[in-house]
Amino acid sequence: RVKESGRGACRFFDETMNSDALDHLQLRNGLRRALDRGGFVLHYQPQIDLTSGAVSGVEALLRWRADDGALIPPARFIPVAEESGLIVPIGDWVLREACRQAMLWQQAGLPPLMMAVNLSAVQFRRGDLLQTVIIALTESGLPASCLELELTESLLIADNENVLAVLRALKQLGVKLSIDDFGTGYSSLAYLKRFAVDQLKIDRSFVRDLRSDPEDAAIVRAIAQMGRSLGLRTLAEGVEDSVTASLLCTCQCDAAQGYYFARPLPPEEFVSFFRARQESSPEELE
Ligand code: C2E
Ligand code: MG
Ligand code: MG
Ligand code: MG
Image 1: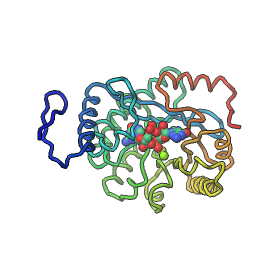
Image 2 (image 1 turned 180 degrees about the vertical axis):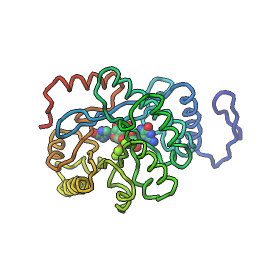
Image 3 (image 1 turned 135 degrees about the vertical axis):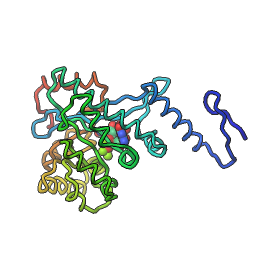
Image 4 (image 1 turned 60 degrees about the vertical axis):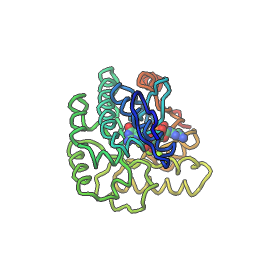
């Protein structure tokens, strides 16, 4: 059977090829087109220092702008981008764009903020990540100390020589390392010793029901304590209400991020958010 796919392209499908495979193919072509045509955008979610109440940084979160203008969230396309290897050029773009934006904000008079960028394990396996980071920093002029890379536990567990070497070199540059979704991966903590990470991002699944679930509260408190003993900053993800924010202060988490403070924002809206927060009373956590 022959089916039409995209403009002029003919592809052969056998009977086993289901609609998933077709979606996959269309997605992959769409991602490639988006790369060529500037079809990706970054939104920035503020990260709040719980001691001062100030914005300490932002996390860059990728969105794909579809032809009709709709923004497609990463969960819909990152898996296909990873399988196809397209995450390497997409991830390169993310790093360069995020560093460029961070420097623009500094030039616009905002204080130096930490720019956090998510990385996929595929970027370590298939790309020249170190080179990309060096280019992104050099091109933008952003100090390495203002860039934080978010890694997954599974990447660190893999214990691959290449990953280890790249992480060491990144640390040497002065880039910060953060473990995303901390607590959801394997339970081995040995890698905290082996890799010089700077921050643990406590996964949203422990934060969501913090106000009602004493077990979650115990876990969050334990992670915060462990972080403190190891000299690591802890940041809680997915804070949606003020009660949870104050509980996190009690648990001695260093920082927090979530809809309660702000959703991921387009760059202009982030600047307005930052200025408004600076002008209002610094502490609205209670
Ligand atoms: P993540 O790095 O753990 O990012 C946090 C996700 O939680 C974001 O979803 C964010 O919008 C959402 N979130 C933030 N605060 C709250 C809250 O209070 N409540 C709830 N329910 N959700 C909240 P998003 O932007 O859809 O991103 C999903 C995931 O996609 C990210 O999880 C990250 O793993 C991945 N991702 C995003 N951008 C990139 C990228 O540039 N490269 C790579 N490799 N992965 C990315
Ligand atoms: Mg993240
Ligand atoms: Mg996360
Ligand atoms: Mg998470």
